[in-house]
Structures are given as structure tokens and as C-alpha cells.
Image (cartoon, rainbow over all chains, first blue to last red; front, side, top):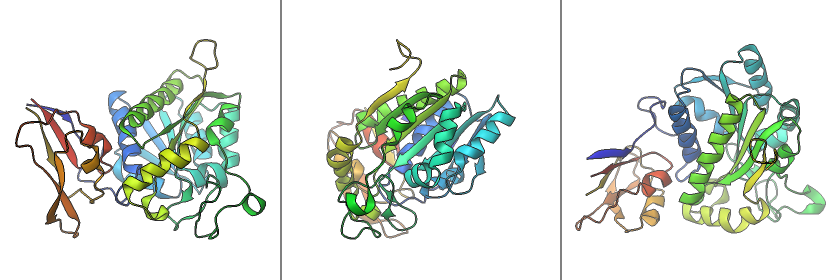
Length: 252
Length: 69
């Protein structure tokens, strides 16, 4: 009998996720770990994480990590990559971190065409601090800081990160994927692999936005949370590849 | 014949695997782990498990190992 699914080798021994039950962060971390194994990157991978649930990555992966100030993972990763161009550098951030607090750092890293990969987990809320409204919160979404629901007059509109990053000239790859179903998880892994490959080929900034669920702060069961991703999030944040310089025609 | 092994110390009782299994072989259990979470159990009396690993891909806590025979 052959083992066809096991824990990736680059995970730390005897780790136990500290994420909430049903949180998609666990799946996203597994996909990253599987790719590090498959592409044989463990010895040369350096991760840059910030603040939020995403920061726990360095408790689970047995690779080198840099802890950046809130939102500044792309700035730290720029320094690491420029100092050691032969290393494999990636950031792992949440949506509030990447697109609100660190929007300038993230956007300018893409504009400069920095040769590292960025992963943004979009769950439409600030998960770790108790479910405040984030830059990607949907219209009408009730959070602890928008108790009557997000309205355009007072709070404005959610940011579509993958489209914005795709418009930067230095970006080599920008895609949005989801983790609500098994086919979407498989697509997510392919998108992450592509973002890692464009870095290894030195083509520019690789970016993947992952639509994830936050059952705790959405106050839903894990199954209902995935249903919300399907029915409410994907229509607002359409899945797909928005820029790929390696594709035929140079752009998509 | 295929089978899965569920690591009870990792399971957090989100029950995503219960709805994911195409054959419905994973069920909620009455047993709890040391944190008081009600666990899931794998029951395959008719050797129906295909080893498709969908439960393991869905599991956010990597609590499932899949063996294919």
C-alpha cells in the first residue's frame, strides 16, 4: 500500500496549526509547503511575513523567515532579494496587511519589478484583531467597525488587488484564485507554482491573491463560509489570471 | 483497496471532510480529543474508498493521510 498524501517534508516536526477550525490559511500554507518540496527550494527559500494570522507561517515551515513591520513585507523582501539574488524570496500576507497598511510598499515593489513572489490571503476582514473592516470588505458586510454594514458613502468601495497589481509594468504574473472547492484548490496550486517560476526565471514580480474564508469572524460554520466565498466573494472578485508575461502574446 | 488515517491530535472538528468525501465514508464521531473537540471517524465496510485524497486536500489541518492500494 502506497502513501499518496502526507505532510510536506518542509513542515516543522510536530507542528500543530494555531489557526481557527476550518480556516483556509491551513490549506494555503500546505500548498506553499508542497511547492517548496516539489521545486526543491527549502535550502534557499526566505520568507517575509508581517502581522496578522499569516505571520504564523514561520511557526510551521522549516525555512528562513524575516519578520517585517506591519505591511512592510514587500519592502523587507526587496532588501533580502537584492542582497542575495540567488535566494528564493516570497512574502505571505493578509489583505489588510498587503492592500491597506502596506499598499505603498506592495504597489511600489510591483512597479519596480522586484524579482520575488507575493502571496495575499484575502478574507475580507482583519482576522487576528477581531474582525474589523478591511480594505476588501464587501459592500453591506457587517464587521465590528462597520456594524450597520459597509456603505459606499461612509466607507468607500473594496479594492481589487490582483487587477491593480496586474496594471503595474514590473509585474510578471498576477492571478486570483480561491480555496472553496477542490478544483479551485488545484488551480491555486498551479497559480502559486507559476508565481514561483517567474521569480526563478527572473522575469519580475509574481503575485497571487487567494480568496479565503474566515469562519470565526464571519460568524459562520466552515461550510457556510465556503458558500459565502462562492456566492458573494467570487462575483465581486472574479477568479483568473490578469497578467502573465510568459503566456503567448506576452500579456495573458 | 485504499484507506485514510486521521490524526486525532490535529483534528479541530471543522467537519469539512465529512461533506467532501464523495462516498460519504467519513462521519462525525462521539469521541473527543484532549481539547474536547468531537472527532470524525472513517468507516469503510465495503472497501469503497478510492484514495482520491479529496478529504486530505480539503482538511485545513493536515490531519488526514491517504494510502492507496
